[in-house]
Structure formats: C-alpha cells, structure tokens
Image (cartoon, rainbow, N blue to C red; front, side):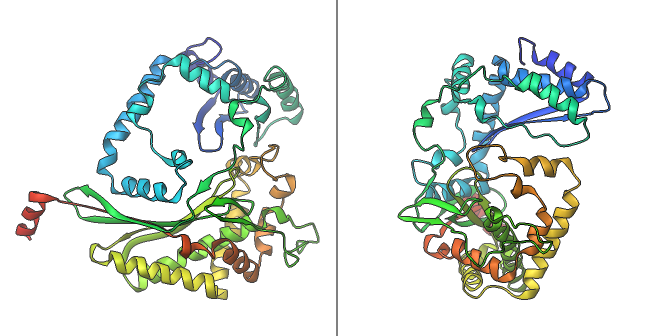
Length: 413
C-alpha cells in the first residue's frame, strides 16, 4: 500500500482508473512499471499520483513481508533439486570476487528470518536517492497535460537536497571478478532422470566498453579513428554505443555458430547458447555459454566449445554469418520501434548521472545497427572477448539416481 491506503484500496483504485503496475529490484536499479489506458478520463493523472505516492509515501506491510519470506523458503527448498541452479551457483562463486559474489547469490531463509517491517523500511529509505529518479513515458498522451502533471507530482519529489547514503562514500559501481580460470565438476543432484548441464563464461566489458577489475586485468575500449563518424544519411554517428552494438551482433553470430557446430553437426548437446551480459552501470559484465551435453559427451563438448570460441576470436566469421546476424537484428529493431516497451527500455539511463548515455544514443537505432561493418564487429569482439580462454570459468552439474537407487536403475536396464 501507500499513503496510508491498504493494498486492496490501491488495487481497486488502479483497476477503476485502468492502471496496471508492478515493481522489481535488480542488481542496478529499482524499477516501477505502470501501464495506463489513456482513453480513460483522468487515468494519466491518477497514474502519476499513484507513482508519487509509492515513491514518497510507501507503506510496508507485515503480510507482504511474510509472503516474501515464504517465497524465499520455498525457493531455498527447491534449490537442491535443480541441477541448473546449483551449477549456476557454483559458476558465479568462481567468476565473481568473494567481495561481490553476494550480487548473484540466492537468498536463504537464514538471511531473511530476522527481517522486520521497520528494519526493512529503514534500509530501503536509507538507500533511496530521489535525485537519481528517472521517469520515462512512451505512448499516446497530450504533451502539455503531461508536462503540467509531471511538474505537479514530481517537481518537488524528495523534498530538497539528498543526504548521501553510506554506500555513496565508496565507488558503488565497481564490481570485481576473480580474473582466474576455474573448474567445478562436483555438482550432483539426485533425480530419477539422468541429465547434465554446463555453464562456461568469462568477465568482460559493460555496455560502455569498460571492465574495471578482473584480478589484475582490466579493459577500457577507447574510441578508434576507424570507427564511423557519420551515418549513411550524413547525420552524426553515436560512438558511445559502438561497442554495445558491435557486441550485440557478435553475440548472435557466436550463439548461432555454437548451435550449428556443437548441436547440429557434432550432436554433442541437446541445446546451447551464448550470451553477453553487460551491466549498464557497474564497471563490467560477463559472457556465458550454457548447454546440456549428452551424459557421455561432457568432456568432449567442453573441449569443442573452447575450440569453436578460439577459432571465432582468432579468425573471425564469414560474410554470410555476419549478414545472417545483422539483417534480422536491424529488422527486429525496426519492428520494435513501433512499441512502447521498446522506447521505455531505450530511454533507461538517458537522464541519469551514472552512465554516458544521452539522447544521441537512442536516435536512429536501426540505422546505427545497419551501419556497423563486419571488420568493426570482429575488431570489437577480439578486444573484448580475446582474453576469454585464459579466464574461462566452467561448472558442470549432473542429475540422476545415486546409491542403491542408481544400482536399481542399472539392473532395470
């Protein structure tokens, strides 16, 4: 609830006003999403008023906290039964420096059992900095009405100058990785079905081409003279997003190459994918390869994945592979350009102080993707991923019968 109104009252108010809302807290931001039916009279103002109440006068409910603790408990109990989650936990514990491993660890009942409403309220209110608030709105609305209502509800939010929370005295955006290769193949999950799951990865740059700390290794991709300065239309090319756009294309090429070579041609796995996971604000990111090897092909599949990655990072890719990734991406951007969700995502961080993102970064996105060349993508990929095999973290998990149960399965076979 908020503003002294119970959750039920807030829900009824939102339903009458044609508003749906949700909130989520990720590694880098607390996000609130509101969807408004602007055909309902007064709905836009009601949505802004609700958002203001939730930010300025949030109510912390003991029942909601109890539900949260119950979810944590259920998740904790199911953890030993999931080979994917146990393998991921082992992987991240090796990838991240111990000082930052908590960022990707799952909560335990012991962690939350002592939480109470007042304690949670104090922690959250002490972390919030109203001057960091960003509001992004996309859709069908009257600009003059929006400007007036935004001034009314958000013009004075926070009540003055922020008092920096304790974490602001440090560098809150620094994230550390071990920068070392590591392997853990000890993960075992008891199950009636035999399955294997593997997760490989390495630290790399964030969306802006920066990796602050991976052991003694760091990266800060400088602007190159060879990078474009103009779009084909003659307008200025946004160099701030060059690394991100090149690696997005490279991501699709690598993922498709692994699928074709490891899954289709060699038949070593049931499924495989590559994913570059850049942070927006933190000084780093990481890339992963996840796959499900056939039980008798685990070691071979890992070796062949390394071989494919090494070949890609050293020799690059073909014109056909490049066109096969860039073309669909440009088409996807052009189709998504017509949706509110795309623009809300695109506008993230534009007015923030923690990243270099500005309006130029979100203009003519399709033309920017269309402008990147094979040579540019290969150059950025090698600079940002070239260290991968020296820092490769590998975790493999197996599920299946154990002990007497396993002997019974063998006898049945």
